[in-house]
Amino acid sequence: MDIERSKHIPISEILGKMNVLPTNPGKNELSFISPWRDEKTPSFFVNVKENVWFDHGEGIGGDPLKFACLFLERTGQDFTVSDGLRWLRNLTNEIPAEKILPPRQERKFEKEDSPLSLRSNRDLDNPALINYLGERGIPLSLARKHFRELVVFNSNSGKRITCLGFPNEEGGFELRNPFFKACLRPKSISFIRGREVKPEGIHLFEGSIDYLSSVAQLNGRNLKADVIVLNSVSCIKQAMAYIHQYGYRKAYTWMDNDAAGEAATKVLADFFTNEPGLQHIPMNRVYHPHKDVNAWHVHCLNPS
Image (spheres, one colour):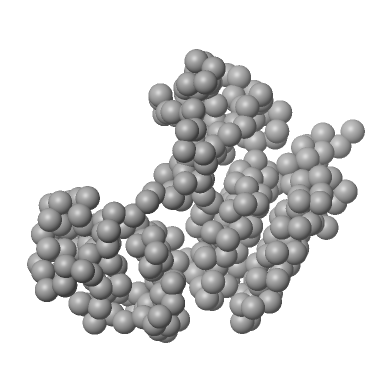
């Protein structure tokens, strides 16, 4: 068993060997009671097509090998990569060969020939980036908790670009500086755990600056409820997968006060109506008539 082969072992088969069965068999997204804690409402999900898992109770996920290593850790066993591969081999040696998935195509969130490549990743220290965040009303102490200072190379222009990097759930980064905005693929949402261990609410923001603006309004304290930063309204479906059947009672949306924001709010509102017990609370009234949360935040700092 090697790392590449481990990626193609169906996670649903692994769980089946552990007598952990889906609560909704036959679906493309299977839900399970967590394999490492007691719960009544399933919070552990497996995307069958992509063969990845996500634990909504803890905000973690990954491939079969990551599951194996984490399960070993939770059960007090050695949990190195070698340990995880050995555990998978021992567990799955009876799974018929035809059950092993063919190598899957990596998800393409951008054009395959994206010209951007990462050259360096460090703590935020660039004066121009710090000044840019200051103009947006984001304190440096807060920015350093969420942004990385990246240098990316654009093979089309031959230029190196220093920019802020906001990490997402797929290992990519949202990139921006005063003159540049892009994504270092893969494109995905960002999930931030709230102050409460099991919050009843989830906040949805369009972008990182809007989210940090709301935190800055709280003097740097994280929101009590969990947070999803869409990073693009095109990532709404990914956000829905995180929220679906998790058990949130309230969903707060902080979309822009423009046509695109209104459309995104409507799509989310339609989704929330099909989530039992989930109340939708649009937050636009807080920052109206400003276009977005950050514009309102900057106005609060400089009301004249």
